[in-house]
Image 1 (spheres, rainbow, N blue to C red):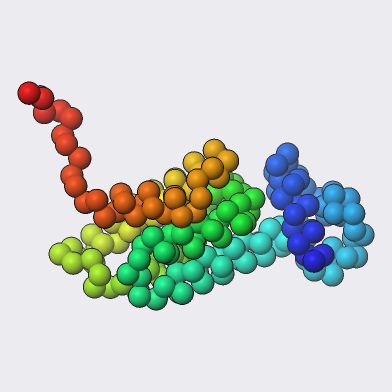
Image 2 (tube, rainbow, N blue to C red):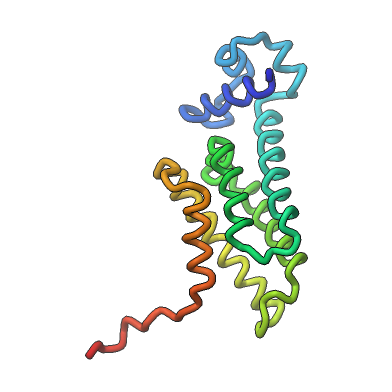
Length: 181
């Protein structure tokens, strides 16, 4: 309960200041706790943020692991988007500010997915498959950024359905340079 209060206070402060500008004193004041209570849980402000990122990562990877046979991209995405919505302040910070953590998370996610579905994507080589997953994961990150920026209006299920439909539609986009009849 106290950890959650501290984390929520830090997230609130991040709306107005960068992580480097926020002090333990400011977090304690926002959380209405003393410094001893803060230090009983965290070393400093960055430690608090790192732990929130790690917790979010564990939840997201648990969703992927839960679907160890990912026959349903939509189910995996729905689970991921539910975590993003639940932890929207932390994920927003990660997606907009902590690029090193984001790149590390994307690499980990790609490894997890590729390890679980090595033969699911037929007809392309392993190198091309890596590029494909990089393309899709970064696209999904862009969609999540936009979803967060626009207020999380769509449900996790609806957003997952959009991406699932795009993934499986598989129809080539008409070349716009060709003259129309």
